[in-house]
Length: 79
Image (cartoon, rainbow, N blue to C red; front, side, top):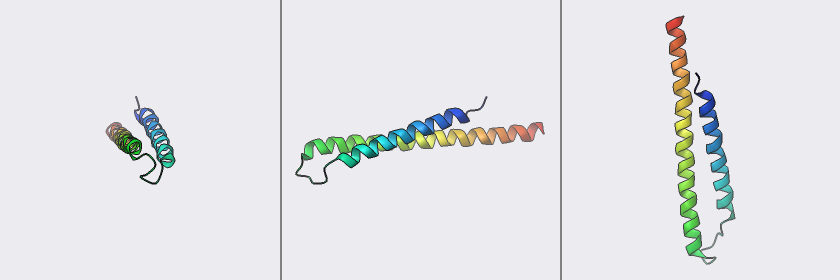
């Protein structure tokens, strides 16, 4: 059983989350006078979402790398 498809799906979901968060950040007002309290919450939520996307991406990438390493070792042992 290969874990690569699972990891690729996880990478896709992390990319979607990153793109969604980037779109939300792009809509935030640039000046502090445009409702700073609401912006602080949105900015904090967006930062958390970005960190979650990064950690998800890294974890799924490690899963794919580990799967490839294990497959290579299995081929070496059976070959």
